Amino acid sequence: MDAASWISIAAVCLTGAAAPGPSLAVVVKNTIAGGRGQGMLTGVGHGLGVGIYAFTAVVGVAALVETVPGVSIAIEMLGGLYLIWMGIGALRNAGNAELGGHAASGRAGFTEGFAIAFLNPKIAVFFLALLGSFLPPDASTLDRTGVAMLAMMIDAAWYVLAALLLVSTGAADWLAVHGQWVERVLGVLLLGIGGFLVFGGFMAL
Image 1 (tube, rainbow, N blue to C red):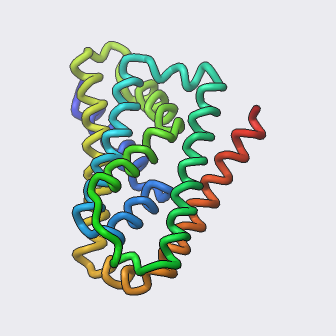
Image 2 (tube, one colour):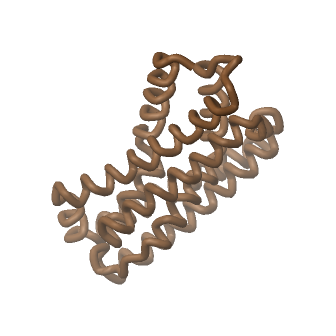
């Protein structure tokens, strides 16, 4: 693979990671709940989940998501239910304490970050399209593995950076002070996205 191919793939991966959505909401939630460490581990967990899809796309297993509609719908609905569960938890916590008062839990942040990525079949489709559009047909196994690792590192780095920026700019402190309202907004956001995914899954059945 030449340098142009690597740059193109990196740019597409960065664009995909930077797109706002439930993943960013989860990183924000964990950063203001548990601080820098929990937010960064959320990003690392998300990157690992993305990396699994990237690696399976490299070996062709993720093609199941594209060719077997039932698999995609099932994973999407599970993801929606998980978001609803997180949203309910956020709304419950909002009535008890400020976000900044929650006990930090890097493991919880890592788990939530991983789950949000892993329960999103659109990531598999994204990588199938990415490999089909930008990866040369004659790319070696080493090149394909390198692309998967690049995607994983870019995704994790983006969300780790987001967590660091929240803390270093003081945004996390402001959000923590207004913890109840922030967590309510995030809870409603997660509930809405989760409900949309579940409803869409039912409509596709």
